[in-house]
Image (cartoon, rainbow, N blue to C red; front, side, top):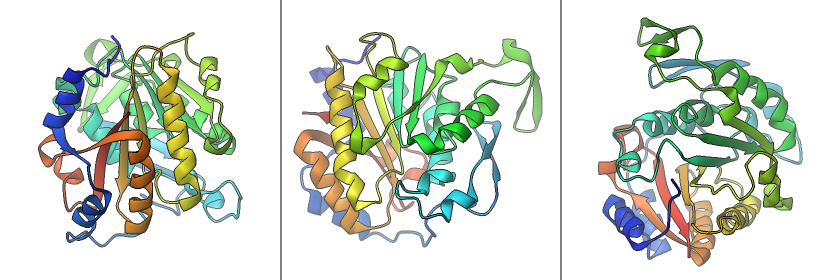
Length: 292
């Protein structure tokens, strides 16, 4: 099943949220509400391992506090688990949500995540429910990312779900690590043909996910560029671009949305489509974009 960007799909998006027509108005509406006072948004920036529960499953994520405090030119923010990821993963794993009910997510989907970070949590969770999930980020994160995938992308023999032990794969859907791919992808020097290393020839991408990747001014245009190139890679369809972000800087947000709006149609998902943790006033926003 491949998602086609036909009018019915656009109508579904119109029913799920409001189309962004004015960037200044969108910025004003999101940043003038009473946003919760938070730090930058890491789950725990000091610990080398972080345990989180998503959709009833426990995940242990290895991260790198040393990288966070380093002065790498390539950046360091990918070295930790950010608060947005567990919230988005929990929402996407719930098949009662509007993405699943409208067919924008489906079990045969191929998904590419941009800027997955060292944790790869969204991929480890969602790969249990789709055909193929590709986690991408910079080369320096790949070693620990692959270790996190190996540790978290296969259900153990005893799966602990909300305090109960459930035996074996017959009770719960299982995921092979082979359905989760990892790929080094640098937005500033990207050739999306690199995706052919992990996808079948001309395998269509149904969705691109970016979770809390919008914060550095100098990466905004490269991010939009890579979204456009991935969208153009599909021969007969345009993938849905799902962008989840913590609302930090109205200036960065406005600049990004302006760049995105030049090449993509954008919708902000309504509160009816989102859990309370991601609704208006939560400090987070979920947008969907499709290449014009």
